[in-house]
Amino acid sequence: MKQIALEQPPVKQIRDATAWARLKVNRDWLGFWFMLPAAAILILFLAYPLGLGVWLSFTDARIGRSGTFVGLENYEWLWGDNVFWLSVFNTLLYTTVASTIKFAVGLYLALLLNENLPFKAILRAVVLIPFIVPTVLSAIAFWWIYDAQFSIVSWSLKHLGLIHENINFLGDVWNARWSVIFANIWRGIPFVAITLLAGLQTVSPSLYEAATIDGASAWQRFRYITYPLLTPIIAVVMTFSVLFTFTDFQLIWVLTRGGPVNATHLMATLSYQRAILSGYLGEGSAIATAMIPFLLAAILISWFGLQRRKWQQSENND
Amino acid sequence: MTDALAAKAADPRSVLTGSIADHSEGMSYLETLPRRLVTVYLPLSIIMLVLLFPFYWMLLTSIKPDDQLLEMDKVSPFWTTAPTLKHFYNLLFETNYPLWLWNTMFVAMSATIVSIIASVLAAYAIVRLRYRGAAWVGGAIFLAYLIPPSILFIPLSTVVFQYGLFDTPFALILTYPTILIPFSTWLLMGYFKTIPFELEECALIDGANRWQILTRIVLPLAVPGLISAFIFCFTLCWNEFIYALTFLSTTSHKTVPVAIVNEFVDGDIYRWGSLMAGAVAGSLPLVILYAFFVEHYVAAMTGAVKE
Image 1 (cartoon, each protein chain N blue to C red):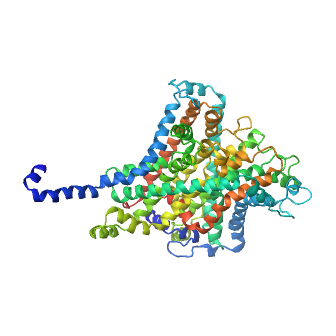
Image 2 (cartoon, chains in turn brown, yellow):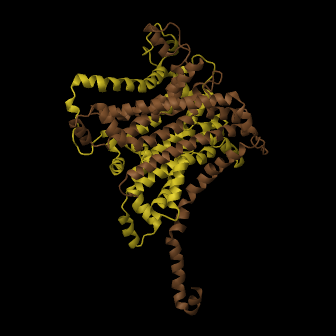
């Protein structure tokens, strides 16, 4: 190209211009510049810290002191640490119970909201409010509701004659667990309900009419029409729900800070306590890194959910 | 089914008003009113009651005078006979609350704007420039969306310290986008896909470059998507807790959620009034914003899980 350009000077200018113009419309070149801001932030503050976190978990870093490589020492230490295993148990319990109930009640609420109701739009808008209000602030409201002496729940139950002593919501091991789980369910239901409702509205009523004529019961209509058609969206919604429940931090931190006697410590709160409050960055990172396999499992499930969805699509609607 | 869903999501209003695909009225006329009372209205009212009670309680506590707060036997605790704005007054004039509110607003606004600009460019490039590996990058961004702050805050705190950002608003303004960019890029990719290719081709033939296409054709058509992304990002920022808790230490730099948890919680038995007033004042801006943009909000939420 250069050879030709030298031989034919008049053409050279045009050729040069074309090369620059070509670069200007080159997809890869333009794509690079368009991606630059997002990529810079995500690499500097997401990918790099993710790798750094795994690295820190193999060191004995503390706050204000960069650590040296200690191999699996942190993990070995955690392996024999009862509090860590308790936090794993709590996290699994919290995630399983809360996600299951969120899904069940969320789906039920979505089905209810899908009925013909008066003030439908307002009802649906109101349902989402728990999701809008910052978690910390609603958690503080729950903290007050769960107060050991002045709990409105204890007061009401006492006046109904159901109990005689105040319930010690956050001071007793199992009470505390159920209390934080309830608060989490309360916070999560609107998200599940509204997203599933969006899915429900794509199901044509004719299908239900046809099934009813064929003699299907309400349960059969749900099981053989609603559920199969909703599966893809359920897969995605539940992945998010499980993911965010599993890594929850705010609710616990406001309500119990992991107490009483570590009964509500989740892996996230324990890693905060060990890494930031006690300063053992290495150990905290090891706890955070131990969450990754669980997250990967959730992501894989989501991925298969999405694949299944692609497979259901008749055409590629890219 | 997916196409119908996509069409739905493109019209956010439908989720709220619930217009159904073929405009048939369904089979609800087959059910009698008493039956509907038990199967629909009763469970619905119970769920709504539980969902809304904490807010009622929050609001009520914030306007109760201190003596009625803890005296539950003389006056029924479910309402108050002497509402007072004392707690709000204390909050606004005797604490740093306005400053914290301003910090939150500033951080949320800046982080959202940074994220939206980065996401618009990235989403356009992935969907329409389709450079080599665009599909792969799209997948990676979805994965980034699934990485929670709880596993990042420890290494991020050392990174923030190294970059000299610790205890400055920039620590949050630069780290919040890691949560927001994946989400809004994903959302905007969905919106950009719905804009017909032909419009861009026409502009290209008329000699527009990519930047002109983006600013003059794609963005004006994607305004609903931009609003959705903006509102959702803003809410996420306002809600964020763990980064703000870890990266800020000076009281006057804190954001509302962190400040309430750390500064208001003392041994005072009468703290509940001001705590609840703080919670109400911290939620109100978001609730007002939400009230104006419900449809966009719902579109963002359902758009995030779609595809």
